[in-house]
Amino acid sequence: MKKFDAIIIGSGQAGTPLAFRLASEGWKVAFIEKEKVGGTCLNTGCTPTKAYVASARRMWDARNGAELGVNIPEGVSVDLKKVKQRKDEMIKGSVDGITSSLNSNDNIQFFREKARFLSDKVVEVNGEEITADKIFINVGGSAFIPEGFSDVNYLTNKTILELEEVPEHLVIVGGSYIGLEFGQMFRRFGSKVTIVERGDGLIKREDEDVSATIEEFLKEEGVEIHLNSDCISGEACENGRIRVQMNCIGETRHIEGSHLLLATGRKPNTADLGLENTSLKVDKTGNIVVDDKLQTNVEGVYALGDCNGKGAFTHTAYNDFEIVAANLLEGGDRKVSDRILIYGLFVDPPLGRVGLTKAQALDKGYDILEAYRPMSKVARAKEKGETRGFMRIIIDKNTEKILGASILGVGGDEVVGAIANLMYADSPYTVLRDSVQVHPTVSELLPTMLENPQPVD
Image (cartoon, rainbow, N blue to C red):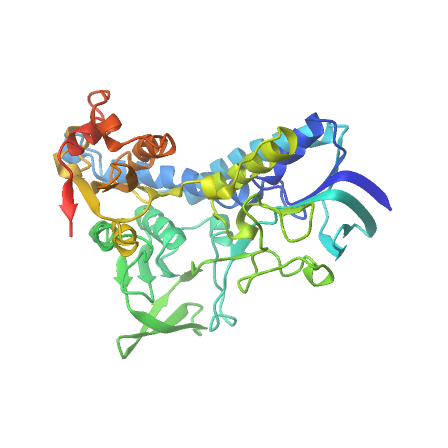
């Protein structure tokens, strides 16, 4: 049996940098990837979807120039084949770069095969048994497919990126992040879009007014939205179309479309890893249980990224790598619990989120102050002609520390980073209030809105 210093299963945003970092320290690394190197973010997540969002934004610009005095002739259309080609070329460049670096690294043996555990420290790959004292699992996640759709030709976040023709009518089941981003972009590409969500709001994890504002501007763009839709199922029609059945507050309805996207959540890719042959603990959703330093219940075995249930974002996966590398190689004492939740929803305008929502802060019993400003009162937003949304910062009244923020509006995905930095510095909100920001920007209104935060009952 061949022994390595480390085995890394999966080449996502934690596994890939970890492989190169360990190799640079002289470790002999077995690096295993059954599909494309780079993981979800590079191949079917962030990179391709944000490339599509950019194309959709150009469509929106072309159709909405008149308000800013720019008259563009009618008839703008999207060439989805070219959009896809641009996306594919972008991904290929990154994948080729990673692959070349792997092949030229003498300390990394790359297996483009499926890995399966035979015991706690023995992994089978390509018919060979290998072992290591340190094993890192970074297998990511994939689309969750609910019951009731097994007999229909559905799309996922992965397969929808392979379309070369714009759907005539895209029906999306699931109203959160994946569904909303694809819904808006394909509406801008020219599809009729219907979103079906079982909850009473599009995004349950956000404050109600955040969810409602996003729903409002999607409807303004022509996206049809059905909330409170339970007992959802799909069936194939004789004409090749797809019918989605739903029960909306006691009333059964049907929606017929040309294409169906299932955006009902994600599940960790742990079911076929052979974990039943190990003593590794897995929770009821399939996530591998880890401690605050990302180690499993088996010493020397770690789970990073989407399969550990500690983040499910590219940036949290990369931070998992940073935590493990610092602790193993630098004598560090970094922990997952030191991480502040931060993420973005890349609809247009985007939502930047950090820390607690207003509702969460109140539920936790904080005595809070709220700083709030609508984008309609932000000069930069008015100048750009993009005044949808608002900014909110939640403050602990007793400590004057920021608990969280929701920045929904133009630049919100970037602006939220300044608030996160202050939270990591563990400084009072008055530091940002008394700062000087660049004019004219969206960020310059952060000090202004913090001048007089209001108490919330």
